[in-house]
Structures are given as C-alpha cells and as structure tokens.
Length: 86
Image (cartoon, rainbow, N blue to C red; front, side, top):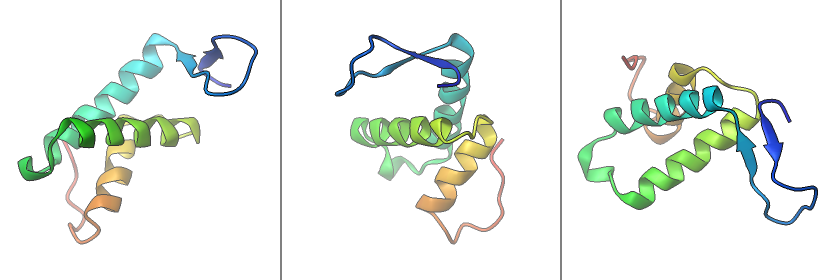
C-alpha cells in the first residue's frame, strides 16, 4: 500500500496507518468539502461519511485535495456547475 502500513499482518478490520503528509492531504480535502457544504447538510455523521469517502478515493489513487473535494461535491451536487472550490 502506498503511503500506508498495516498495524499488523492480520486481516479482518485492521485499518492502515497513514503517513503525516497523506493525513494532511485528506484533512485539506475534508476541510474544502465541509466549507463548501451548505450548513443544513452539516452534522457529525455527515463529516464522518465524507471522511470515509475521501479515504476511499485516496486509496484509489487521487491525492490532490482540491480534486478530491471536487469529486465529492460533484457527486453530492451534480447540478452545481463548474464552480471551483478555493
């Protein structure tokens, strides 16, 4: 796994450990999505689901925080046009 290590050699729910730069990139992506999300959609549960989605996309190879945020927002709000996140 690029950028991560397994806590132990067993499978079955063991989560990979992340390097600090990967964590920073994922946190920046989450902050971008959260800042663009209308307040009515904000909750602890929503934030957790967004974080899990970011991890999944990161594991599939997308590491750019702006692109991760765009991908998620495009899925959540497909009709929002080409507005970019700052």
